[in-house]
Amino acid sequence: MHVIIVGAGVTGLSTAWALIKRGVEVTLIEQGPIPNPLSASGDQHRIIRRAYGGQGGYQRRISDAYAAWDEMWDDLGARHLVDTGFMVISQEEGDEGEDYWRGMVEAGYSLDQMSPQEACARYPFLSPEGLRFVAVHPEGGVLLCQKIAADMRAFLLAKGARLLENTKVVAVDRAAGRVTLESGEDLTGDRVVISAGAWVLKLAPELDSDLTPYRTAVVYLEPPADLKASWEAAPVILDVGGKVDGYVLPPVPGTGLKFGAGIHKVKNADADQNRGIVPGEGERLRNHFSPPFGRISEYQVSDVVTCAYTFTADNHFYAREDGRAVIVSACSGHGYKFGAVVGQKIAEGLIGGDVDTARIWLEARD
Ligand SMILES: Cc1cc2nc3c(=O)[nH]c(=O)nc-3n(C[C@H](O)[C@H](O)[C@H](O)COP(=O)(O)OP(=O)(O)OC[C@H]3O[C@@H](n4cnc5c(N)ncnc54)[C@H](O)[C@@H]3O)c2cc1C
Image (cartoon, rainbow, N blue to C red):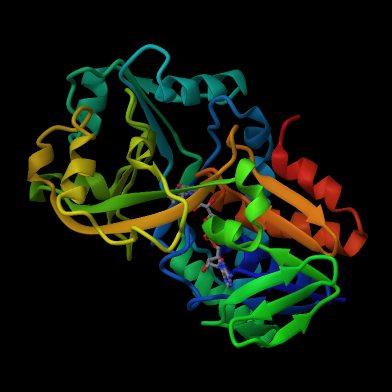
């Protein structure tokens, strides 16, 4: 079997990894370099954690995600996961921080829960203003996306995959299993996987009722000198509470301190547009985080990175089989941590001729 994969974000790379390990011939096509800094998977780091607020199906699948990453570390000969633990913060009754906390408690995990005063003593970057509670758990951390992509690229090349970088696919004939490159060349496979992230609607425009692309940005910050050490020892913060849908990735070796906020995302029809940074964007993003952090204006903006990603209406992942093609997206802002296992599920579906089982797993409605 020969499988052509369009898009080398974490979904495409992981699918290629899982297929080639199972003896399948793979051609992986990426419009930019691998990793592509414009892709959703191309930033320095992403969070992995067990807590899953209202989406219990994903909380129940997270052990499979960890197991798939472990298999990948064995193949890559390197573990690109830094275990920091995670924190949730609640500022208001019923906020997302409380949702995450409740999901964990209901699933039987025991969290270290702290009063605002205890939390501020332990984590001096917090300010007690408006805090309800803070809880931490040791199982969670930071996946080093750029290192994962670079090592996966090397692994695939060593295993004989055909990698076409800086090569754009302009059309896919799903019935025939044929992709057309910008150069005009056609390639045909037994199956085609379209894992094109926020660009998917350029190849499958009829999916615009299922998949909505958004543009967002994250800000890298240099904290005040006296808070540097506490940030370096901090857990990932899944939600800072309140209404901003904000999260924080602490600096781990080779990465910066990163803040991102769901309220910063805007609907954007085209993943190639509005990728520049708007003046003052980093400071605006940063300022969403006060509270729960004090002295926010003392944090210096060191970089702002724009991102494009897709969402489904209910934030579940997406897979659809059409002819010889499968369109797949571990999307909705929480898919990176599932990248390796999604690749395994799609590979098993293609080889076993049962993509629907993979779709049901990805949708995680049970
Ligand atoms: C700001 C932000 C924060 C996030 N935080 C987290 C987090 O903490 N934890 C987590 O688990 N998830 C997180 N996510 C979600 C996660 O990053 C995505 O779900 C995941 O990276 C999607 O991977 P993908 O491979 O499906 O898409 P992408 O990474 O976007 O990859 C798609 C690839 O396809 C290529 N491509 C597209 N069209 C073509 C074409 N025509 N020809 C050739 N190549 C093409 C693109 O160049 C791109 O490289 C976050 C997302 C964002 C944007």
